[in-house]
Every structure is written in structure tokens, then in C-alpha cells.
Length: 262
Image 1 (cartoon, rainbow, N blue to C red):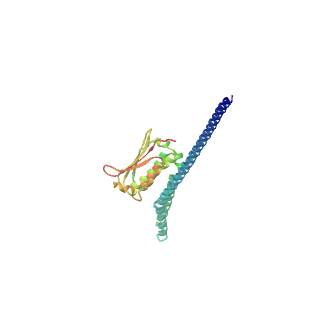
Image 2: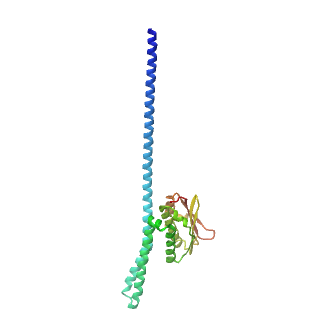
């Protein structure tokens, strides 16, 4: 009988110890799982923090590039027009009566051109305006203004599907096209520009080609050409910009980005 009690006690002890071990293992698994979740949560928070910091940095870079563009546009366009107006007004008092009205009309036109330039700059910064008006119409207005101002011939091969692009993408496309037109006129000495669009299921392309001066490959990154800012803007829509010389003369700029629609 005593031996039976010993065996029962031994079995109960083994069961108790086994049960305690199982409880300890379960607690350990729970703690381990909790620690993994905490680590995962910490990693997610860190990743979110890093992403937020990267986003803020990107926004800051865009803001700096945008302010730089605005400064240049105000200096090159509005500044010159207003300077011309001031000079005309200074000459006004020294001119005979019959010539004053001509100068006054020139000053009025210069001020109108200044206001038009300011409107164009503000439109290029406003995603809502371009999205509401439509990207294609915005580009058409940009082309008409460039032709009127510089006399350059611009062939815009329209594609209504570009109006389906998201607002932010539309602004970036607009700004890159505007930058290309400016470069063709100011640096390329072009007399003709062609703008076309390739819309497919997987990729969108904007092709801007001119008949101006061909450049060395390294020259595309020269200060003042805006190549870096264009490439950066393209990266914001997961795209890229390629600069290449044409077979005979001139430069072609290709903006390519994924076919994401609004």
C-alpha cells in the first residue's frame, strides 16, 4: 500500500511539474509573442517616422525648387516688363505731347503682360486650377502665350486622355513642359518645338522635341537648365526624365511615369 502511495505521489509530482513547465512555456511564448509585436510596432513606428521625415524633406526640397522657379520667373519675366514700364515713364516727361500717348500705350501693354505673367506663374503652382480647367487646356494656354511672347512655333499634338491624370501629376507634367519650352527658347535658340503624348496601360510619356542647338550630354546638368529640378519633380510621380540630342539638331526630352489615373 505504501508503495502505491509513493507511485501515486511520484506520478502526481511528474504531472504537476509537467503542468508547471507547460505553463512556463506558455507564458514564455506569450511574452515572446508580445515582445515580437512590440518590436514590430516599434519598427512600424520607426518606419513611419522615417517615411514622414523623408516626406517632409521631399516637401521642403520641392518648396525650395518651387521658390527658386518663382524667383527666376518673377525676375526674368515680370521684373523685365516692369523695368521697361518704369523706363518708359521716365522718358514720358521728356517727350513731346504727340509721342506721350504712344509711350503710355506701351506702358499699359507692359503692365498687362506683367499681370498675364503673374497669372501664368500662379496657375502653374495651383493643382486645383489645372485639374478643374483640364491639363490639356492649361498646356494649350501655355503654348499660346509662349508663341505670342517669343514668336516660336509650337506644334502641340493633343491627347484628351492626359486630362485623366491626378491633380498632382498634372501640375508636375505642366511644370516640366513649361521648363522645356523655356530652355528651348532661352538656351537652345530653337524656332520650333513639338509636344506629344504617349498614353498606354502601363506607362505615360510626354515628349518635347525642338530644333535648337544640340548639347553635350554633361551640359544637360549645367546650372540654369533646370534638369535637376525636372528629374526631381519626375521622381515624385515615380517617373524619370531622359535628355537626348536629336539626329540632326536640337534636343528631345522624354518624361515617363506609371499610368496611374485619378
